[in-house]
Image (cartoon, rainbow, N blue to C red; front, side, top):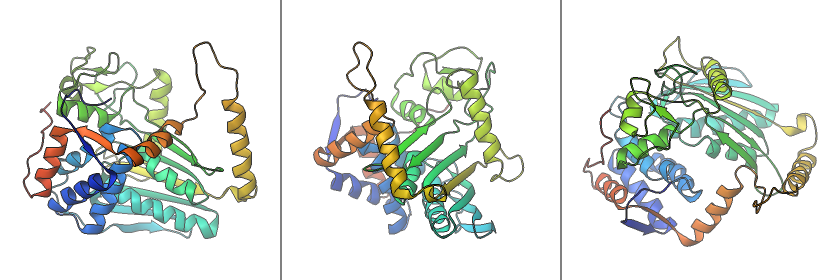
Length: 341
């Protein structure tokens, strides 16, 4: 949801991109790194996810691992169809961008590829990466085992991450993209609301004593809840188990990221698959609707529409976020600090 502020700043796409790149160069990123980070958050903003858009660059600057030494991403183990990367303590939006390119490059000649990454932090929207894979004519599956922020079912303390899973499927027109977290509320949105003092919805978080809360600061002391009760909890545990393939030992803070990509034409010709999936989607959208429902939407459809509209009209952000990004661009570390849990 938009920040609860009457002061909003309208930016064209070009203005937003320039601001993002300047902010990232202002805190030490090279121009190409700044471009990659800016592209990621700008796409999130265009798709209508304000909390995962430009404010996320402030999360980069004030992340505890940002000040630690970074090193180039390097392969730890690899075969012709797989590679495990040490991300060198890079931002996850950089690490996963290069991992996505790697999984595409390996899957194209071999039909299938697995890429794992560890030692990165804060990877951004998983939809961004699986869309890249799908637009390359591949089916992509991306999983994350994130740092503890979510209580297990019935638990009063965080033990699992928000642990998203995302899928990208090539299709006629825009790909089918499905991206969901296994928590009842997303961690990036929690940080956004904590930064701006916006309350949480009911029923998504508990405080450090295990009591329901709508206060973002209290939720950071406590935990988010899994979505859908035992179903979300089970999915979160499955994502954690997959992430352990990529993360060293049992270090819960050093998260694991896994990417699987393969060619549809291992089974059917790509164009036949694209056409068949588009036809299936058309059948689903033509399903008779319940009373009061205007349209049956497909996951990702709203985001594509928002992206097209905002690309024309520009976007709005909270003035506090805008001013904080300008301060970063000018080399002044003036952030809207998240209130300390």
